[in-house]
Image 1 (cartoon, rainbow, N blue to C red):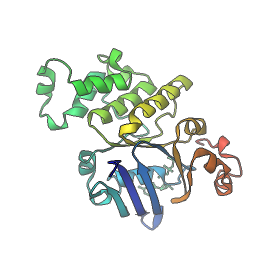
Image 2: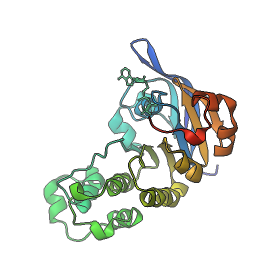
Image 3: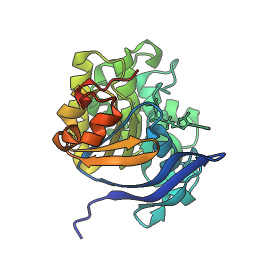
Length: 251
Ligand SMILES: Nc1ncnc2c1ncn2[C@@H]1O[C@H](COP(=O)(O)OP(=O)(O)OP(=O)(O)O)[C@@H](O)[C@H]1O
């Protein structure tokens, strides 16, 4: 055993009153690879992540370690080391960067009082702050951070929770070119020890940072491979309205 982590999804189906937002999805996400999920609007990307993080009920199987994520509640999934971000950042705006991280890491600590009273910054919080590049902003309220910085703070919150599997939903949407580059480098820094899955529409970002791409269409896996393989795939080109995936945008 190499000890490499993975999430293996088999036959995942999510049925919303007869409408299958995911249908028999098979996909494996491996530690150390930045795995992108792409596909047109409504393809079922967010639903897939929702099902794997306990927000909607799916059928099938999603093995992580010795657990089936589909049989767990969201708090159990998070405790098992599987975390996610949302399209809209969910940081506590009125609290500082440090407090947000402290709270995220403090699921096992008891109270606010303890957090406030404690002197010094725990090493894992400091490390997360440095990894996501927010150490200099630690006393700023999260609400005044730039859009990109809020997304990095969310990733930092997953780091302090020691999430080994991270699902990131359109993390670079709305970011400047520089912020995207920094985000890509951040993903590369954290990927070796983690299983990273990114939902993304921006093909330039995908092309630059993807190790593996899975294309979803109408709830199903249409194709999987490297960026070059995906872009050369006629079915994928067809789904993007006959355009090359170069032109795939969030419309
Ligand atoms: N709770 C729900 N009830 C019914 N239908 C839903 C529900 N959530 C999502 N859907 C539908 O499931 C389909 C897949 O949605 P989903 O958000 O997973 O797509 P997506 O690929 O993430 O799209 P986007 O790129 O626009 O975010 C859509 O047709 C959506 O309207």
